[in-house]
Length: 119
Ligand SMILES: Nc1ncnc2c1ncn2[C@@H]1O[C@H](COP(=O)(O)OP(=O)(O)OP(=O)(O)O)[C@@H](O)[C@H]1O
Ligand SMILES: [Mg+2]
Image (cartoon, rainbow, N blue to C red; front, side, top):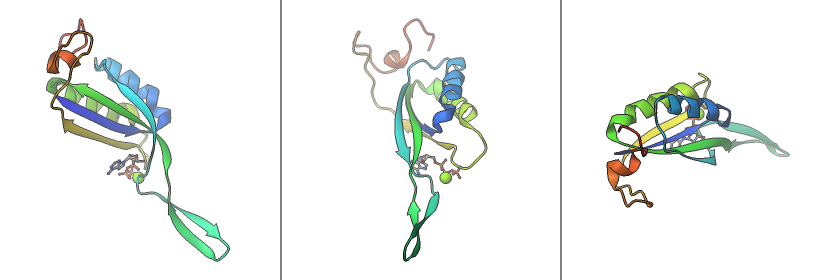
């Protein structure tokens, strides 16, 4: 199993969700976060200017998938989240050790597979 973590532009949230839906990825956690992606801004002070690391609003997705869905999830996020301008975000893929569906006690791949889904 993999845990796909992605940070995208808030205004691309719906495009990413739509692309994930088309890729049949069903379990998704989303949160609003603040991120820094290398951009700096110049701040005027009365003694001159200084450079400040800027934080911008981003949306973070966390998606646990079986290995066979990892590439599809990454492609969907990359496609749905892209504008081509700097600041489009990042996708990280981590090995996921364990998952449990609380209702049934299902473990691991069964737990990240939507009920009624195929894999
Ligand atoms: N190395 C990183 N670790 C953790 N989060 C990151 C990292 N790089 C980027 N992010 C997150 O992704 C958001 C967007 O990053 P950003 O798209 O600016 O990355 P970038 O590598 O600078 O690409 P670009 O050149 O398109 O700006 C950041 O605000 C931050 O939340
Ligand atoms: Mg950047």
